[in-house]
Length: 204
Image (cartoon, one colour):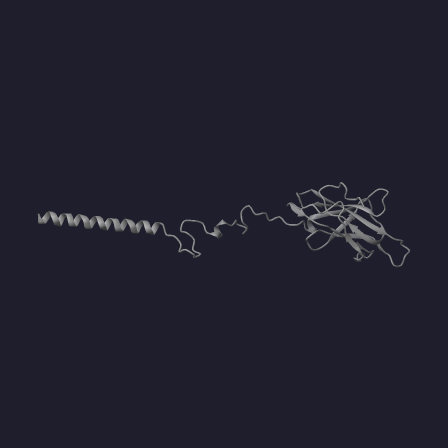
């Protein structure tokens, strides 16, 4: 009887030890962070691991406004409408970019120096349209120049133009379509909003 009691006691002790070892092993495999801490759960990606190789978040666009070096700007004189131009900005870059707002036109004298004239942004044909330009696509706006008399000493003559794009710095050369040399005695300039089509943009 005594021997049987000792055997049962030994078996119970062994079973208890196995249970304790099993519990320890499970606890080590499922370590969790302390509530309120910044520690990442073992075996799960942390926030840094969710970033792409270039440091951006997946699915977040890196496209921005069309920079002046990315576009080709052309001013096309409108037939029988002196001083009215269709301004186009073509995305020449390999990446898509956005245009949203008003561009600008800066007159240049015969030495290539910029000079200032009163300039106004007008809502023609309406508010600007936020548009995405793929490579080769175009944004359109209208430009109205009030022209004076070249003989007037108070009027500056433009022999060239620079242009700027909305929401970015810098300027780029704006070509006048169909003209290698020209003289525009510019008194003031009005510029319409950029739109995805040419319809209505030159209705000044």
